[in-house]
Image (cartoon, rainbow, N blue to C red; front, side):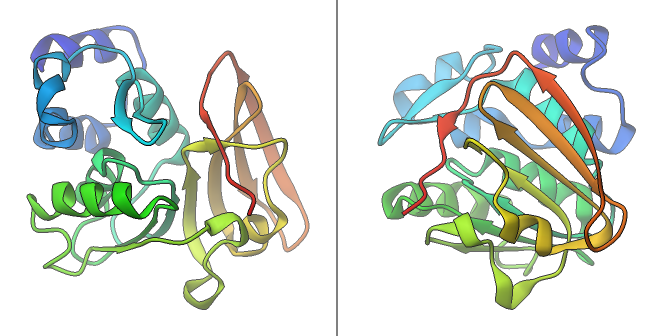
Length: 205
């Protein structure tokens, strides 16, 4: 793990102390299938079944640096998969925060829930895992300080933008890029785009 961390920090991907601390505390090995434990510290995506992957550490680090989660944040996470990013978010936001983690595939949601539970985040009420299609967000829990998605679509769903607080940040893949939105007003967003990434597709129905 320390070699992976050195690669991410020395490469300038991981910069924020709270995010670096979370990466050091949340072991990626706890979130990969048993047969891939020996590959847990590779800087590469790994299959977790059902056509899904646990994202490459570089990609997770890059997206969390864009998201800039903070203590006490209320976060919507779309496509939590194995639960690794969920646990990282939970470690960063602490007991005063909340991650509403949604995974469309029920079997993956159960796999991820068991992994997240290893760190006590569900028992402590920091993480609330759900299994449904989150293309329309999670309106009954909105608004959110931060929204992050691990699945790519042709555009960012309008519902996600509407459910973001003014001043909040949304980070999501769009086609081959990662897009970061900061909500300036009810209808105005500051957008930044970072090309060159690959993700599993967002399920629309």
